[in-house]
Length: 279
Length: 67
Image (tube, rainbow over all chains, first blue to last red; front, side):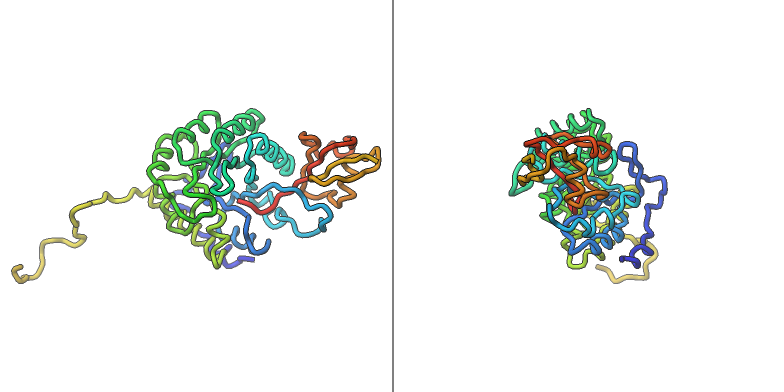
């Protein structure tokens, strides 16, 4: 399962101290991945290994009564001992339902309290309901959870989430599962500039350049699911995303050259040329 | 027998059954699941103590693939 990618799991940013700190946790990888929409559990694991991700989101759903309980379980292919499992409240439309779902998740994961809060406001766009998200976040934080909150790209809402104690704010690049990339880099830029907790792009990434752009903007990490799972070759795309996030982070840390809008700037010396014909 | 709801479906269970009896019957013992009874978490350590009452609303969940 994905062995060739395991051995190629090389890249960390040049600065080994460049850890991603979320709440009380520290990570090397700045790519967070979902576990949904894969062909089967084997492909799920291969892609996740290929991505180099340490944090993997899962959904919480009713068990199927009457179904064979011996069938392979997601957590047997992405064991909590090997990955940081990040349960989400995807599919919830009310704060109360999100809180219940994440309390069940904490029980399921033996007390681990790092969660992804997602409260939706609309079934067509899956746009987040920010008043309900804020309400749920307050309850969860009071109850001892470390809340990573999926949110709109509105800097004021993001600041409110930080102010009430969320450990990360996770604005959408574009609609969940849309693959449309970062539609409003300026808003994301404002959120990055003002935030004192990690800013993680969550939702909307379509391909590797989208992830690189997010990191070049200065995002702390990128979370994606469909971009990998719905690629024709998910395992290869997982590796592409790993490399894009590393490249984007390095480019951000390196500091890009200034843009010259109206003139060129030769890379070669302008003197010492052979005798040229007059122009 | 008591009428209860499990994951939204009505069912009858013998009087005196505990949460652990229900989980055993459903084949969930030892699995990675979590249980809620009438909106409150039932901690794993309480499965053998908490008895099922008529009209209880039980939710049993597990982790599945998701973003």
